[in-house]
Length: 224
Image 1 (cartoon, rainbow, N blue to C red):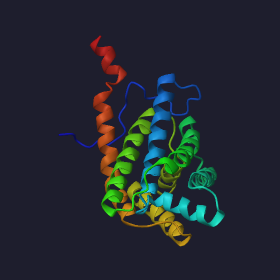
Image 2 (image 1 turned 180 degrees about the vertical axis):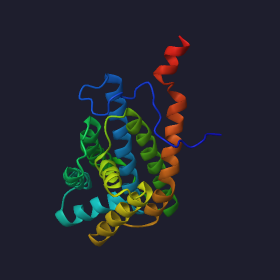
Image 3 (image 1 turned 135 degrees about the vertical axis):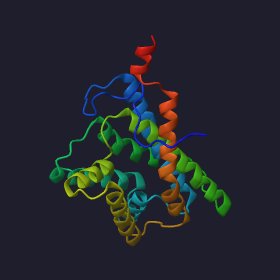
Image 4 (image 1 turned 90 degrees about the horizontal axis):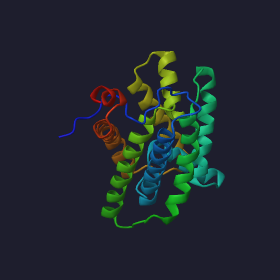
């Protein structure tokens, strides 16, 4: 039985420097794959039509108001959040920029070609699949260690400045994003609740699997 990871593990593809502008090719490939899988997971949940993750509820609401795609709205939200990094003195990495771009593109590319079931059982199943995809994508993206995503960096920056526990900061931010998105017309539903309950354990499990799958370079060097 797998244990749940308590922190992001170091793998053979992890960057030694999260601010590196010339990461290893392997690290960059893993990062891109992870972000695309993450965005695809978001698209799968959106296509299910049962409600989406809190930040995607916000993107849906903005999409409804501006008449743009959800991917475009997701990118817009990421850019706005990056501007909120400035007073927190946070610095974006390669992973931060690619996060803002690739997840948005993956949503717009994948969502139209995915099933849009009407049967609720299939919808719930699709939400579960999408949540697993987001977890897998997170496992790859986080272990690349090339800078936090826009929302993650904002969260950690607020925590550093306020010294409020990270869990409370994350919960507060997600509730605010969800509330604004819902007011703007984003879909809050069963899918949102399923995602909120399962995403933490699934990401932790995926991180644990990556730590087992990829032996850190230090261990490899010691064994050879």
